[in-house]
Image (tube, rainbow, N blue to C red; front, side, top):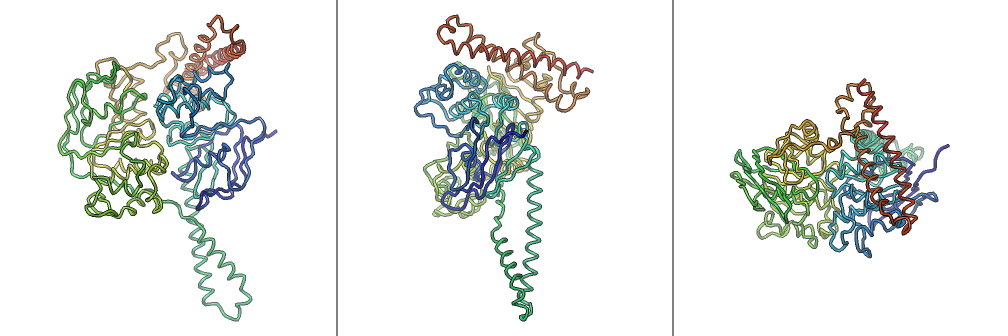
Length: 613
């Protein structure tokens, strides 16, 4: 018997004072759906998700959620007013006996529940919103950019959680690797229409190109038919005019259809000018050391960056990636060691915090008041790579319309702010690009274009990012910062780093041995003896079995961590008398996880034996 949908939208129309955002939209989310929601920045992805969550009322249409189905929504800017700590907010919808769930999730997302709301950063607030959703475990999860402000380790943890959940989810993310790993269907918002493909994000680009090709062919046929019918209307015999009024009406209808067709939004006209060539040696760092408040950022670090290198910095949040980047560019002095910058450097910086954007200014003023873009005596032109250009014309190159030019920068979405910052740094010639989290909030098309531009750029690139796919496509060298001052240099991008790290092939830059895999710490655990992926691949395992074998050590890790947390909670001898309900629920949860752990270990052993033949 078919199960009822978790959510159904019927004939939804929504207008925010201008052109319709959606018109006649129909959408269904089924149990166990794992859906990527994609579209250009400003296409309405977050708005649609708010309609799905019931937070935005459409102008017309119906939203149906069956009784008993819970829909949870993780928003980009959560309202934490009225809560003292992040943990209070995250546990606000839970029974007090289930508050331990927040602690478990908080550990994976790397935030402290006891952090006061008043001092929490934007990233911490978003992690609290994500923790709240995961702890509540609704039947349908709506996740709007959940990986923003997460480091790669936390992204991997979240990926495991979503892979193992029984809940359905709809996911907006700029992280292509994350989308490919998790989704089985794709919703694409394109010019106010929502199309669905029953394949995950992996197939999105091919599907999009097929849709556009079919559109172009249909439009070409319509244009030819209009032209032929228009010629007939002009040259037709007047005696037949009365008989052919239907044909004339059909011509008028075709012209109206053609006029109503909305042109696809083009890609941003981004361009980089490398300007004068820098010296061959761009950066020479020797013996760098830096510590803040007793925490070692880096020690005894050596690095040589040559012209044309693309160097990516990866590691957990707070490990010091941006600090090291600022030391290498001379913005921050090291505690010890030296940094020598090469000759003839023109540097352009994309900062993670978007601190160079004055949110109270309009886009127009923000451009013309930039010292690097100002044209003397003109308030309507900016200097773009040495040539004056009208400010609106240049903003249009980055997909901003004339009305937005007079709007405050603070009204822009995260993706639009990123595009504006790219417009500013691309206006001047540079031969050293410093990009600190440039991919946050950008849509897929802009990411693809930025990647292509960086591939053709003649200068040098220093990149901080948690986007594994982007690092793979751009980086020629990866520096992994793993805490306690360890910084290890690997050739290639993220996947190369992972493969080399497994073999201990990196070049350690502070005199320590290469970091070992966490699973080697427990010899008695089955995951410490797990065959490498290559071993599994040459066995008789199917693709699904190979994938499961690779994933099981992480599942076992998670279950062991949860069991340890619950055991610690139940070790309180007074818990039963003080909070009997909490004691009972924790005991049930412990039993459930111990059973799941035993099953996971048995599954791993069976697959490992099959892999070995």
